[in-house]
Image (cartoon, helix red, strand yellow):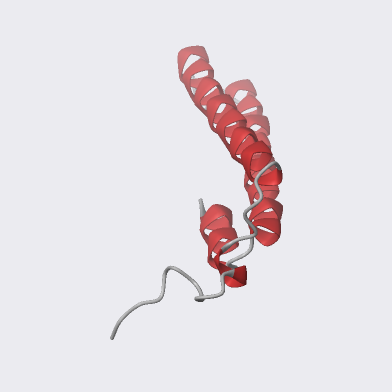
Length: 90
């Protein structure tokens, strides 16, 4: 989640995509740690199955967002003529 937020705040789709790949990789790391937790009996098989399914689903969603952004003509708010969309008023 933090990688996604940080990438979004960079203001360009290219940088956002880079951080989305990091987030997708982190989901893979979590899946790997789930196997360790299962092998060490820290979690049950049903708990593993549920968490693994959720991680895989999140990874697929991130992958879909990456593909969407790669095929988009938008470059991100950093490149807009009027400036970033998410400026905060005092």
